[in-house]
Length: 127
Image (cartoon, rainbow, N blue to C red; front, top):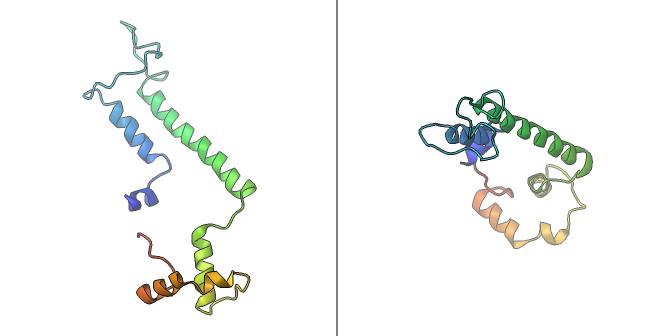
């Protein structure tokens, strides 16, 4: 699952779920607010049908991505935890000087144990 989340397209999981729900064999009903649900002679296609619903999934994902991207890069400029962990590793390994990092953290028992177990000050992550 970690690999899927890491390599999937932005909206792939949502699109997969929508395709499954739109499969006629499953018989998942559309919302009663859909104007074609009670029609005897019309079906939705470009409006309120399968293609329209799938395009809405991608459109929502695109708009959400743009909003989150703006917040990340223009509003909440914060150091990510894994980047901070990388700085701790670089400092303790002698690769860079980050002397502003708290000494209690640099001398913690947890870091010593991680280094003893993995040969690195970085925590193991999924690949």
